[in-house]
Image (cartoon, rainbow, N blue to C red; front, top):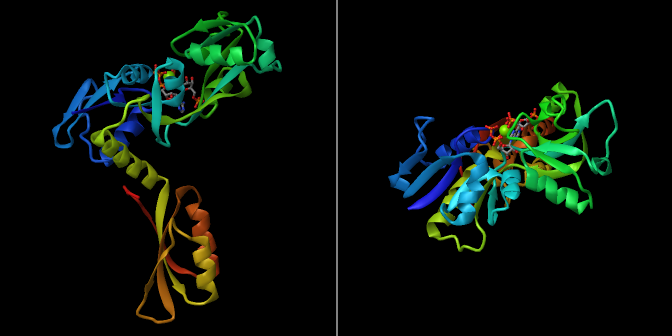
Length: 282
Ligand SMILES: Nc1ncnc2c1ncn2[C@@H]1O[C@H](COP(=O)(O)OP(=O)(O)OP(=O)(O)O)[C@@H](O)[C@H]1O
Ligand SMILES: O=P(O)(O)OC[C@H]1O[C@H](OP(=O)(O)OP(=O)(O)O)[C@H](O)[C@@H]1O
Ligand SMILES: [Mg+2]
């Protein structure tokens, strides 16, 4: 049976559960359950703290796991990314009170509060800097106000928490993170694990696209329209009852699909429909 770790709470847990459900796996019905047996798919899920997941996978106790790239790196566990999942996007930044300009060099000899000590240690070393790392479990943004640190290094999503605490980020991002599906470094993933990765990939990839259908007059408008919607291989073009018109179908990136629909409409294309892709294989 394939053994897979999933975040039991926190920023990644809802999206991870939604992707797995869409991929056809059994859902957890009670948020206190720490395991779910999915006999139909030959998978057992383990609901763990996102911070611990890379440790279990790196030790080989569990075959695959969903966690954050930043957490996996900080853990130092020997894991590889099988797939980036497109949710839980964040950066990991230094920050300090906004009333003063800071550069990374200013961190020398200072106290830096963080929940990700290894990421910070490695970054300071790469800059040839020495500083004191104050390890905290969370709510790091309050630590300067409380007098235990001069600067922090923490996860930034929308940036709202930093602003609320009068802090400003500085320096480059130490890690551009998102949810990732990980396996142990150097293990040949078996057929079951590969199938699991493909199923999850099918859902994640599907979410990044929409299917566009439209009716188009033949001629220059058609040439311009298919240049806008090249699809992955090439758009599907089907005849319509009216010989002067064709029906076109193509996958387009979700991010830009509303703009694209506006452009198609301007061209004179009609009946433009966008629909979700729930899952796919390529
Ligand atoms: N506000 C956010 N926006 C985007 N991603 C986030 C945000 N907060 C956390 N993450 C990401 O989610 C992952 C897990 O963080 P999370 O906050 O869920 O764990 P935790 O801090 O260990 O747990 P908890 O906050 O429940 O104590 C990390 O990869 C992190 O980058
Ligand atoms: O940029 P924002 O969108 O405001 O999000 C960033 C905040 O979200 C996370 O905190 P979380 O809620 O997980 O609490 P924690 O500090 O206790 O981990 C992270 O540690 C930041 O504090
Ligand atoms: Mg957190």
